[in-house]
Image 1 (spheres, rainbow, N blue to C red):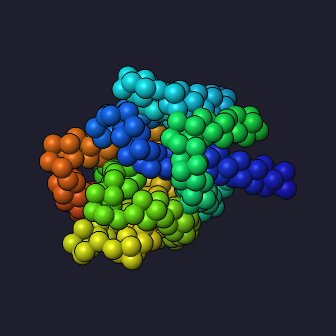
Image 2: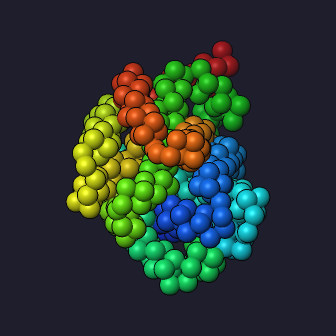
Image 3: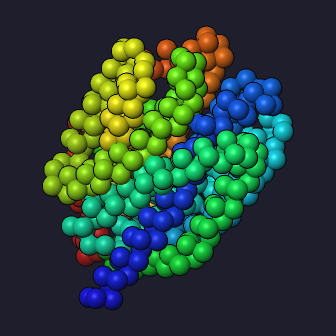
Length: 402
């Protein structure tokens, strides 16, 4: 028992460190939009499109990287992702054309993130801990990603101001390379096959026929739309409205700081209360927070309050959403099924970041996208209300062969 407990703790710690680096580096990309676009003579739509491709490929690759992690363990997948992430940042720092930026910031980093973020590492965590502690463990690892967003953002801004955007990205590539040794130590043990296990094809068919699974996917689309639009375009939105750049970076840091408490609390509450109902309330409150932010006059104080409030709700969806997948379908194919749900999150991310840049270049403001984000909060709250997290009933081996 002590050996299993130590193994579980090691998986949680290593997973937390990997997510801290991966999400912490990514959280600062929005700071590069204005200086990079101005220096290279691009509209914001070019950089926004590269990040949109990043989020899209991250999602499209996630079911496949998740399936590989389910089959072979998370270590190899995370190491591969760390290498792609580091290379993407390095090439991003030397890119001077829209194509180069799309291939580096979009393709390489998108594929890298699919290997070393939530679906892969939370699948490893879900297999390593007991069911009664699963939601809490996922909340702890998700909170580590939030800590990375808080702790690394000031460093990203410091590098940007000290070295300029190109050299800052090269240094960030070196930091991303730390994921490789951490991933190599992540000795995740794939769930042993038992007579009651179902095949990958059967798991896909089972999920495809489950109404709650599709409602969860659609709800996670909304989450992706909102958080990536805010994460990438908020600094530019504040800059356009005369708010100092330092205020924008502080707001994103506050999002990361309070996200630590929000994700931990969500994981804890998910072990006590209905996870679908918690998600419904979370999305409703998120819509209220966004509404208040765009209705009241902008000031540093209102921006900081927004960062605190939205931070509490930022990644709180992650342990609850992955917890529902584990509760309903079990952990045998958790990374793969969680990856499919996350694909919808990234489709939403693509729409949020791309639409934000496209409509800004078209209209000169973000008004339509803010209103759409509020409307989608109501839609997501309604979708999650009808999800049942009761474990799916499967015939026993004897019943199946009868």
